[in-house]
Amino acid sequence: MQGYDMKHRLIEMIRASLDACAAAGILDAGTLPYIELEAPREEAHGDYATNAAMILASRVKKNPRKIAESIVGHISDREGILQRVEIAGPGFINFYVKEETWAGLLEEVERLGEGYGRSGIGGGLKAMVEFVSANPTGPLHVGHARGAVIGDVIANILGASGYAVTREYYVNDVGNQMNNLGRSVYYRYLGLRGRAVDFPADCYQGDYIVDLAREILDREGDRYLEAAADEAVPFFTDYAARAIMAGIQDDLRAFGVVFDTYFSEKDLYKKDAVAKLLEDLKRRGLIYEADEALWFKSTQFGDEKDRVVVRENDTPTYFAADIAYHQDKFDRGFDLVIDVWGADHHGYIPRVYASLEAFGRERERLKIVLVQLVSLLRHGKPVAMSTRAGEFVTLRAVVDEVGRDAARYNFMMRRSDSHLDFDLDLAKRQSNENPVYYVQYAHARISSILRTAVEKGFAIPRYPEIDPAVLTLTEEVALIKAVIRYPEVVEAAARTLEPHRLTFYLNDLAGTFHSYYNKNRVISEDPTLSRARLYLVRCIGQAVRNALAVLGVTAPEKM
Image (cartoon, rainbow, N blue to C red; front, side, top):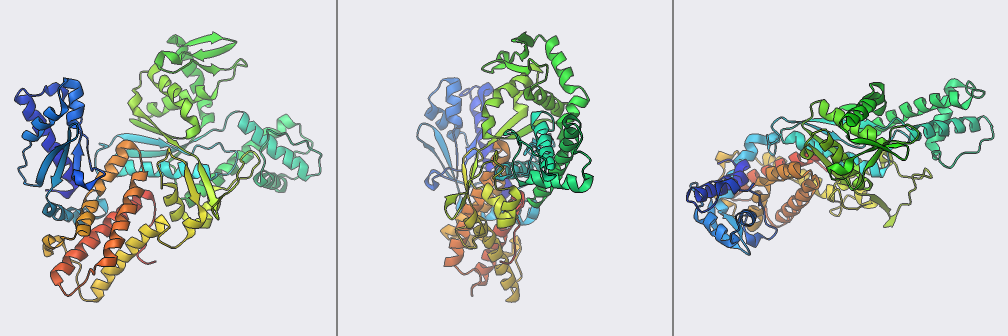
């Protein structure tokens, strides 16, 4: 039996039991549910538990415990892997796997190596993850950093789960914010030449605007001093946008994030995608005029109110461009589209789904991941930031200060939709209090154990060369179970788009390993036990290394 399939083997047992119940006329085969099987939070509730009976009860209008009894009564454990199956509470079914079964599953870790944890659940479907997509009006700050690593790791997880993944950055290079950028640099350019300028409040602040103005002055000299503003500003806008995007790409590379495509909003207008989309909506009777503006009938598709797509001054709204952009994504053949947005875009979700339905697209093909705000802490106190005043901590500054690994890992330490406090001092600390150090140290410690074993004349054993029955300590069994469940963690993260599951997993695994190592000798006078423990340690190292790779974090062999 393959260790990789432990959870799925149990699911197949449940499914076979449900089929047997249906054949016996106990349950209606047409109402059999999707089977959810998870590891319970409390170990006393077994190794896995399912609520299938309760889900089924609401459909067939029967007592869930009676349904659970029928399911358990028809379970066939031909391979003899179960110690027992129990019914708990209103109808949960708890599965207890024989302890000796777990160690036998470690062979799969050795066989698959770097591929352990990968699966084909994506079936080769084309998935696009669009993330960051910050306006090219300034450098990326720490708020962008969290969205960047979450989007990148989601893409890694999907890639490890059998999807063909494309990373895309949507460049918002149209509209007032771009004009304001050009004006900002232009006014600073004039100021550098001693011209009296009343710098408008809606212009961009920050030293980077002055730096851009100085670059242009060095390159172009006084060429634009006497030019009319409406002639000069487009040049300043284009120069600043290109320079800022180049800086954004450099900063992202330093953070370990590389995009496959950069999609320019300008291109939507160059190929009249927005105009064509609006015409299509008009033909469908989904556009109407009111208050000198054009409105999309989004309420027909579940939105709380209709949305403006063309303002009274005849300019399309951002929403109109977003509809066109999402249609373009699906027109390019993507089966699954994932948007990683800031939590302040929560209210935007219904209108985007409404636009999909208007064109006959299934909502399930678009997934939206919301990312909450980040608070930077230094010496235990919040670091004051104001993007309007140009006072913010950039992504690059954080990476330079704490390192890529610590930055990526710490941004992943909580659910994406939960507020995150990022402690700069803690992220730099080389101690067990620092989560990434704690996990990386576990891998380095394992590497040291294996090196020491070789130095002492122990060949690192393969599975046929060990006796797994000697791994009986409670912590050994816990470590074996944790390693075997790693593929389940990746699969669950892919299905839920919750990358924090990997950091949670690694934190728990590293904690259990360090505790075990501090109490027990891996290499002892007992060669049988030493070989088994060496093999277990090697498997733990593989799971840690594979999980860190998905997170885009290195697995050092020495620290």
